[in-house]
Image (cartoon, rainbow over all chains, first blue to last red; front, side, top):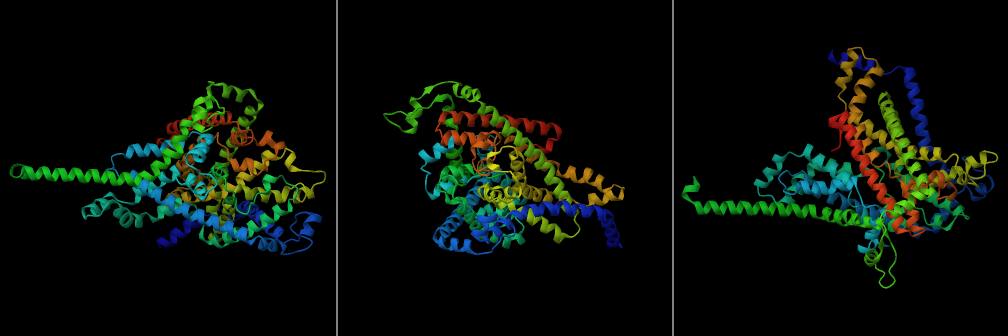
Length: 271
Length: 321
């Protein structure tokens, strides 16, 4: 009976068929808009160079071919290298930054930590004020030696104060303080408490601060396609650009290829 | 009881207690240390570099280390800033940065909130999930890759749109359409992500609120206006404060990679970030680019405080600090 009434209300609550059609048109058009460039670039990667030279990039090339993949195969060591680099940098960077973020925000969450206020301010202030790009660049390059090495691609992005705040809020809302007190009384050390008691509860929070966890899981397979086909297609596009200035002929397979701190520094996260 | 009988033992216990308290603080300090050191080195140390903006940075020929250069350079007060404002560059880059960001903030709230509400109304959940996934796609691309995607459409020689239109030579030398291209590219890349953020907030709303509204005879529009929007308010506010705080910071990749760093487009694509980069990397003008960077940070600081104060006045709970 109650279920029936609920069903009726839900029906009452849904929009009319006409409105829903409009919704589908709006959302469908935007979704198409989002996906068409991907399809286009993939089509380009399967079109023959002669077709591109005569009619330009087109959804229906005069001739199909897999020569761009042959080109990619020629450049296999380079492509493999760039995948290796980006995976290495992503894995090390994610592990380190998650660990650092969790440790730091855990101390901010502990109300009995003496310097909580100080550390809280230390991270928060950097969110609203900074020294600017130039001094940061000079400090990284000349004082810390972050130049032309892997560390230059990992270290400058290790800490994100916004994630610290998210993580601390998550600890506050999901980990009861009594749990920590109980663990301490049972003789558990601080690190033991964090990794054995708090971490299992806080897993969703850790996932939340990592970008990859935010995407819908069903799209994972498509993302793999994007990871493999799109770079190859872009490399092909780039190869066709004989006459472009030299700067742009840097490998664009994956942006991380460029071993320059400045590029990494400037590619700030968009949130 | 122990105080009278065993005062010595009591002291020992309190000492041990004190010691354990110090130990705890110390252990917690080691936890905070890595991030704290990182913040000090990579965020606070560069703040000292602000002095660069007030100096005439010259390389010292006898000992050209950075610190030595800095110490021996002359103080010039606000000259770097004056120089910055005397040129037309300043006017253009401030106009562009502010203009684009205002458009991004307004559209970046309206469109994702609308899409999230619409997505929530789609009855077939599978279809809604598909839309969501498709919209999310561009978010994973870096701006460099986006620039090549765009290039496939508007390349001067092979671009599809260029070939379709008669008489169009190159998009990369004609600033006219670029404000629209920039705005569109930004929305294209980011709307999906923000929509999913808002949608997760909408799905978190207690359905009892909608049922109560429906029983009271609220139409769909009224439900959206009086239930959905108020529930999204705190999230809109936080994103708004953060974006207003960054109103003087432009997305470097968008303004540098997407127009392919084309000089003819500087009037519509030059923003503070690209200016600082070019001043530093092309002309090597460290002092002037620090001055521009400092100005950007100070203005951003003022903006974030103002936005927060305004939000606090409107809705106490939604403010960030």
